[in-house]
Amino acid sequence: MIGIDVGGANLKVVDEESVHIHYCPLWKGAPLADLLTPYQGGAAAVVMSGELADSFSCKMDGICHIVDAIKSVFRAPLFYGTDGRFHTSAVPQLAAANWLASADWLRERYPEAVFLDIGSTTTDIIPLPLYNEMKGMTDLRRLQGGYLIYTGMLRTNLAAHIRSVEIDGIRTPVSTEYFAASADAHLVLGHIRDADYTCPAPDWGGATYQASLRRLARVVCADPDEIGERGAIRIAERFWEVQREIISKAVQQVMGESGADMLLTCGIGSALFARELNGRDLREEMGEASDALPAYAVREVALRSA
Image (tube, rainbow, N blue to C red; front, side, top):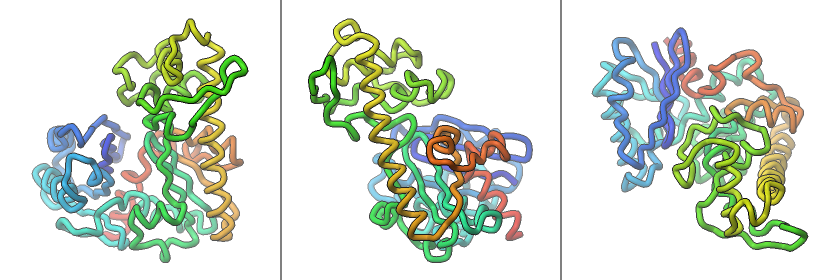
């Protein structure tokens, strides 16, 4: 059996031997079935969040598209829903159930922990002691409850979090154009490597330190020679200060509400936030599988159910 997590930007597949991550922008009509064809031949357990891609008219439209694509490759796939059950057809409960699959697998191992999953686009904060109470939650309800934050390590527009930055001692408003992404900030700050910059850059340029400095300078409508390397780095630092504060406050709130006494981290930001928030990095015990935890978890839950 393989586990599949169909996101809006990335497709993650976990089998018995390894983890496979494919860039799969559904809003651009990415060939989901073609990407999955090399894995056909066995059973598949599936979770998704890609139904929210704006190429679909509504969530149900996206769910049907994903289900049909997977059924064209696999004979009898199982789809995990926000009700904590597996389904064999397109139903509303399939929308954004990937976080619950992770919680379903982790809750028996860490019953008193909060689970923090920092991906390329979003951050999930899941109190494992409240697993049963959280079943059925939509992304809307999770946003309202502080369990879902739209900030990530790679694809977040810096202008979504900062309104101004100090350049040469002067408060400088930022442009709201998509000139630089969180990947640029984290790259120049040393939080990620060039190889981790797996999403397209805002200018479709390179994933290098110098290219990121150039994109960061544009956030204040400048070139690097106008504000210098230090000015560009200051923009990255300001974004990181705000992003870290947003996530830290949300984690503290959820831990307080749930009575949890441990923080687990995974995703591309796992090591960074384990260090910042005194958490336990799941990558240390799971290896690369933690980078695709929903895919790994839904496979394990399906095998457990079988």
